[in-house]
Image (cartoon, rainbow, N blue to C red; front, side, top):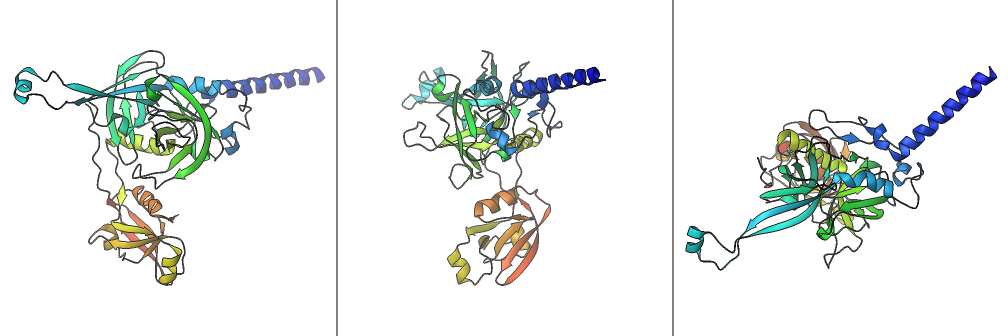
Length: 389
């Protein structure tokens, strides 16, 4: 009996050790098929849920002297993007150009990055990398090249989706951006200045950055990992090599990295990708109001019993809010049960609602608290980059 128990104990120990090694070196073997896939839209890999502390690697032993394992997992799925745009130099003879062509005709070429997110050939990048492009080419880290088709772009989030037709594509694993914490280690991967694929490291400096004037809808991850021109559309990954964001912009007076970079959370990028692939466009909710931040002075002036919310200074006549009974001077405190404190939060909460559905907005009107039921309208679309067919 004792010998049998000893053999059983040794077998369990060996099994646990093998599981630990696989989880450390090949987590994608365990993550394949986990999470919440989108079978009706595109197949992707989603990392299994992990404790928040594991995002920095402390809980898994990944905090070592090298992030090479994470880089090896993620870099094959990050590609270089070359977007060509037709342009014409001024000063030519229009009649000569009409009959013989313009010898000074030129093409502008922009360089950026993209991330392969599906074995079906879908890639995520920034809309500004490919907007207006007539030809888009991508180059993989293994040397393969392919012409990419623009599935669609969303200027309001600066997300675009590309499609290539190649087999055996390396695919990145989606991480949980909501689990990120300030101080977590992240890696930025891309093609800065066209010098070739580069990996830089840093930490998450801040979360939920908005009101930067970069996009209409902003909820950026801020990082001090070096991001430079050409990194746009590349990957921001954690120490497991899981995708946390799409590198988008930098704050710089010189054009180079000053340690303030911004990435679109993968949750936002995934939602936009799903809409572009499924419907070819992004549809957002709209109520037709002019919001303003509720300051302490304004709340005191109007004797409002609330100190947090969004002040409505204008209501579009015959718009969804007007039809639902909203008035200038109302303070919106909740949208469909979600608290709102800034105009950006109000815009994001409303845009997440589906047009033609009903939603309840909690409103403070003087000393009265009201629940207004509105039929959500469709947000007017911003001009999008034309899709290549």
